[in-house]
Amino acid sequence: MTRAELINEIKTKKTFLCVGLDPDIDKLPKYLLEEDDPIYEFNRQIIDATAPYCVAFKPNTAFYEAYGLSGLTSLEKTIKYIKQEYPNHFLIADAKRGDIGNTSSMYAKAFFNRLHADAITVAPYMGSDSVKPFLEFDGKWAIVLALTSNEGAKDFQLDEGKTEALYKHVLRTSSQWGTDENMMYVVGATKANMFAEVRTIVPNHFLLVPGVGAQGGDLDDVCKHGIIKNDIGLLINSSRAIIYASNGEDFAEAAGLEAKKMAEQMKAYLA
Image 1 (cartoon, one colour):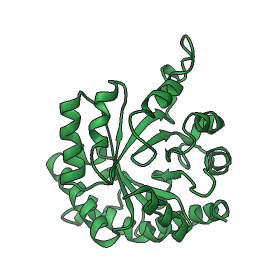
Image 2 (image 1 turned 45 degrees about the vertical axis):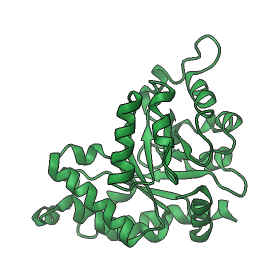
Image 3 (image 1 turned 60 degrees about the vertical axis):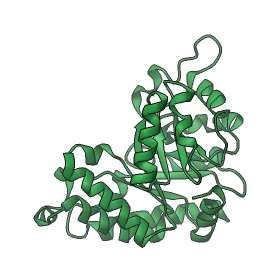
């Protein structure tokens, strides 16, 4: 999916919501456990309920890898379903890969050629040759970890070092590797007060923003400093707050209502 296509979807649907698909067997409604593939069935119903209110889905691969081959089968089926039923939705593989060049090339082939994801999250710690292989695929995106929403982000990312905080150095350096047509950044909603600084370094790149909802991030704070005029430039991800809005048989309906509520909030910023 190109940048222009993504922006068009945002403006057409009047939302920039991304729904995270992080299924945990222990949290699924009990009746689903009778299904041959409870993870896929859970995802399918969540996808159908939330698709009208989002422009992107983001399966976190750890929640599938934890169940071995069956989990990976569920992931592949989930992605195939999205691509068949909702082909205009942006699909992010949240895999956080990052290794030397030839290994990154194989990761890129796995997620772009085999699974047909539109984007993959990548860790830039090993430098340019660990990220550039993901930028060699037309219409595909690398989403680089920059300023994450977890508590441990302060251990390295906020370290001022000799000149500037590490996350700023990551933004400044990595922005030279690709363009705002094939590279995005992960910037956590719990660091909303820093979005203005982020935008001084990468004013035009899309930002994937986790942390709204269960982690305590505030949508209004993020939008105030993070939105790009006309292009929006944000994908706000919510996972647990949506997919676990209910653990009963109405889980899909509850997820849809929660997604709709978030989408309604976003409309004001698209006016």
